[in-house]
Length: 185
Image 1 (tube, rainbow, N blue to C red):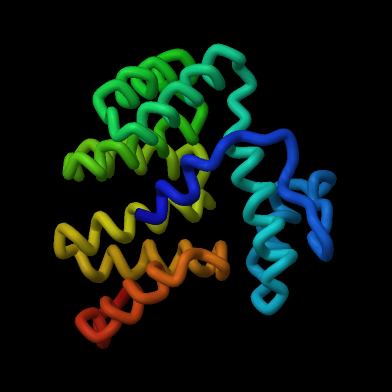
Image 2 (spheres, rainbow, N blue to C red):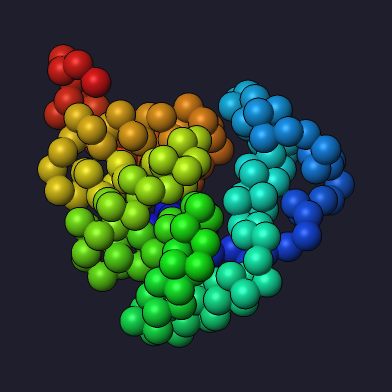
């Protein structure tokens, strides 16, 4: 699922820099989202996406960062119950840390606990309304529970924010459009 590829990347001190990749660390979040939304320059777009994600992963707490690392290790071994224990602690210790809620939503999704995943995604989007990964995850869940109009709206919003999202999101949009066509979104 897309949220896994976005949310579970290891934290780093800066966005990946390489040949032709701009350093966007000095930009504000608004500037980064403006840079990200411009289609056509995939190198710069992907760098902006990585910098945004890097900032989202910064909790400001060594304890929370440690718990997030342990949750990541647990997910890697598919020990989802243990990952949930760590993430429950994260959202208790730092309820304003959107990425804790996002990662927990991912685990709930993987366990087919859509109600719990939706509740956590609602919290993510209340804290970070432009969280394109959470919007994409929301859209995929809404598609799975046959709320096609809402799913299409969430997926389109995610792609509007981040035109460099995984192709599976665009495929889901193409899949949903014919069944929603003619309805207000």
